[in-house]
Image (cartoon, rainbow, N blue to C red; front, top):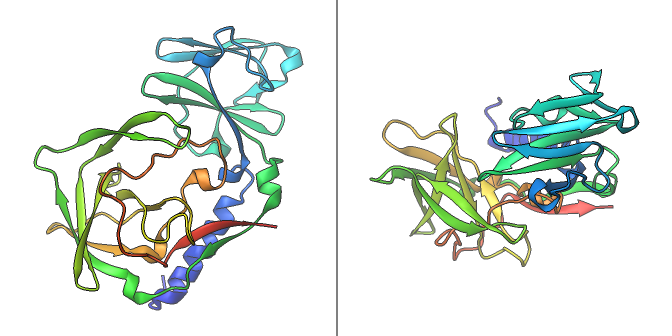
Length: 263
């Protein structure tokens, strides 16, 4: 990492573009299919037969399905659990498509990632505000006394799901204190879903912010230059949570990623 914050941001921004348009990046998602919607086990346009069985999904395939698992053709039945690794390392393929098993709140789904997706072919760029040091703010993480709490928030697919929150980050914008409720990731970093005065005006409906793990005294850098478009900005089939109550900032935040740009 260089000592020039603007150069570091430019490198980060370019890496984000490359990640998004990778063969199995978010633009390649063409469907999220909930197995409860297909009790007969056949999902239109998805190879194989899929069935829930407690804590596993049973995939049955024949030669005509042309499915491989761990690089070997599948003829018969295999039991699968939820995929947790990178999409490009997922176990199940049908041609170029990666078939990824997903579980949310006890419900199972199969996601299809296709490098030939229309969204990936159309993508050109991520519009982002120029780096502005004034939007890299000192903040403080304040954990909840009760620890983690879960609230119900609407998701991009219209369903409400639980969002786990562990505290809030506080920071000043032009002398006024603002707060955002945050989750804590497994590596200790923070995650906020937020909207602001630019949302639905000059930026996407909402964005993500991922500050690094706070210091022992709670100090944390709140860098809106690295505000992220959520996955659902790149494909309609993601189920991103909307901002929880209180996570809509009154101040407009022009920094960070704003919109997907297509050709």
